[in-house]
Image (tube, rainbow, N blue to C red; front, side, top):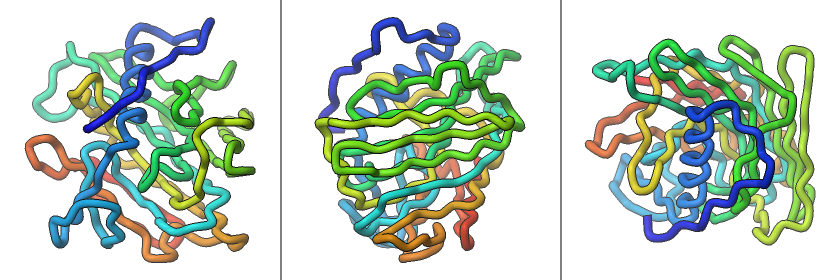
Length: 261
């Protein structure tokens, strides 16, 4: 990546453990670097802000609608129980995240919310979080999730400098409202993503998450509610540094299914 920004932690932020602490910092570093991220078309090997049916990314997998006028994105998924990938070590930490967001595909803005997971040996950790770039990822206070929980997440763009994130699970919900942000939301993409991320210049070990299925995947675009399959969606596959495709994505109606391969 050509550029990145400094990572700032909010004073007094409570972290679940050293493992989750590192994962949060690494995800924030990756999100900061995303402002120079590129997607590669798997059809013609072109680079840039592509609108091909399928593209490859070093950190994203899932679906995106690239358009204008996006004001809301939502979806529901079951938190996976991650596992050490084939050939991995039980002494190594492996992580991943699932989220929905507005912007970030073709610009430097991004408002998002989702769940982060990590596994190391027999230890598992999960965190529900929200973020508005370039500020640091923040955990929802007093809101916990674990593997098997059905989680509904939504982001709403209320202005060019603000929006709301919401998460619901286990009969409870939490939200956060942003306003007066320096990075301006353009509303040019809606995303349903499973993500790997980096620490420094290297990808962190990516956990085998099995399958993450986003249901009820809809967006409000120019006042109309559309499904994830509408408006020529981009199918994003995650490609390792060695060139191997680590995930596959299918988009059908309002369902986005991301499978670890």
